[in-house]
Length: 329
Ligand SMILES: NC(=O)c1ccc[n+]([C@@H]2O[C@H](COP(=O)([O-])OP(=O)(O)OC[C@H]3O[C@@H](n4cnc5c(N)ncnc54)[C@H](OP(=O)(O)O)[C@@H]3O)[C@@H](O)[C@H]2O)c1
Image (cartoon, rainbow, N blue to C red; front, top):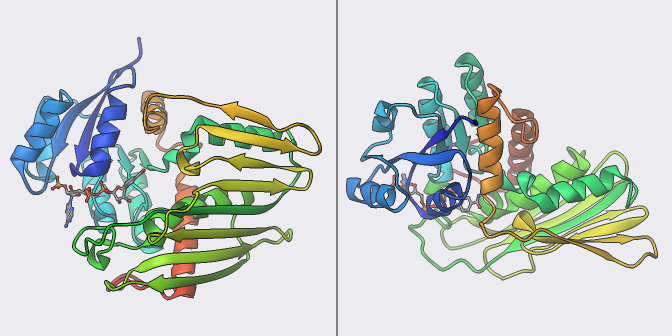
């Protein structure tokens, strides 16, 4: 019988709702505790909706919970490092939302703390665990499209003008790159590794955040990636992985794709479908559950070294595009 993993959530906003919904679809796991920094009532209501026995009105209080196995951090970007360090100090395994933190320095501190406390830590890059992405990796490993030479990917939607909310608020780490540009950036690392050349430009909005960022990456083997994110237009949010012999189309929204198509040479295109009833967060939850059951301190599929590469790439893109957050280098 598999050990039942008891989860806690810090920050009961929008993504916490989706995560808790998908957690209820995962076998041998349950929501056990919920902490809100602003309202015990919100925490209690959330806990009742998802049958969690414990709820608190401060993040510090969640550590009073008996038998807590893991915490999911669902706060704005600017708080990820602080919240993660708090959990690790209490030796509670952490799944922290993307971006892992605001910059490389913060990520390094989080990793140091995970190692010092011998505690599991993973960035919630759910895309890595989506079956369509795994299938894409498998097809490339089977040499169906040859060496990857170009990636095109975009992520865009029209964000409502709410300057105080996290998406457009620079004090909460708002902006397109860190919120959604992180997905095409991650895809490029997954399929091409770390680039040798980076070009990036941003458009800035009224609140000072990057409303749109476009970036072009170059690699040692003459491969390229052409990537884009925007909070001003609804784009197709698809990805194309082009190789020397063919290509793979990851249908929109690519970060949570249910369908991919393989175009192998002159052959008829082959579609692969991965229907599901969940949002898709169940796959990353299952990965964490398995790691904890096996006593592992990090995931092999989304290792801490990948989080270091991802934040380093975002730092470099920010620097090239002039995206600045006060007090963050
Ligand atoms: N993986 C994905 O698909 C995905 C999708 C959306 C968002 N995300 C990530 O998840 C994180 C949260 O996003 P969200 O859309 O859920 O945000 P949200 O709806 O604004 O919720 C964030 C929660 O953080 C807590 N919080 C603590 N201090 C806060 C402050 N100063 N201002 C605002 N909220 C504060 C609040 O909960 P309490 O009042 O309960 O403490 C709030 O409800 C972001 O880092 C984002 O990148 C990931």
